[in-house]
Image (cartoon, rainbow, N blue to C red):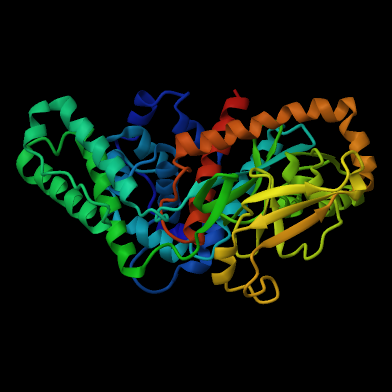
Length: 483
């Protein structure tokens, strides 16, 4: 078994941990809260147990990635911190005098051991199991929403990320020695990514060979993060841009290039399910899967709270069939069934406009029919003809030579009178107030755990990033509620 490859931590200095690391230290609390042996069970098929050298303990490797998600550091700096930070060594089940791994081992672990593993559901399920065991989750309602993550390699290029990280590095240097300003290499002034990479390489080389301050802790961390980014960008240029990322819309005039994470969360702010998709996917289409995943994780679901994106006809029907109260306001453009080709055009609730299957958003809309007579009215959405002319899906959708491309939706609000009546109930109004909680959770993921920008290219990389970030925030929330 893999466990047998792991040597026991026997050290004359082991008692130092009890003297140095306080009981309320977060990493100590996580170690005491979680039985990480589940990592062995999940990864045992991915190790050869008979041949070759002993593998690095998979629990330790997993914990390194968890530390990376919690503290948002590069592989190099996570390993470096584990060399001298006693709380890190304790968390990693190392003896105080133990040597650390090579940082490159983390890349191999991610690519070889975690590939094609359903880590997202597994880790969320583990934290929900802990929360249920400790009687932390008492509610029967989940709150749903989607948060966007920009691709590491977006439409503008990764130049902005390089600029941001080199700027932070320079700022750290100036705080120690302002005279470095005149010694640094000249900044890149072009929009060419290769030139920005070249500037960053010169900056790194100067700091490491001529500055005399590269080994200071305040300089090392931003320096290593920039080095890791440059190396990743060079590799990515060789294999082209992020093939999986797609354009999504935050509003009618605000788009992003990347991914969406569709999240379900209990009222106690424990994430119970998540689905990572490309950026153009419709929020409402993920609802039923989020509910089923939450149930599979051990959550009882009787109420679902979400914005208008989740009040589609299918979701209303599904909720009714499963005796679930759907606290999601109706939106005429989503919930009315009087439209054709529903599978080819999806409504984006943030922008208030329809998006075709090619990902192009309508540029404007107009309502037609007599005002005040809902069922006789239609909303007509106008698309950019120039995009339609070049669209790979134009056959059967756009006729060559046509001066306009429109899509019309009839408004029939009387089809949803039951849901409309529910909207006016006190229960609906009271539960709607809970929705702010998930917006705060999304903000925590982005601003404290680096979830605003993907750390690597590809959907699988995004799922891994999501799994570790959500595992971290759930554990922190459980610790807080368990005090």
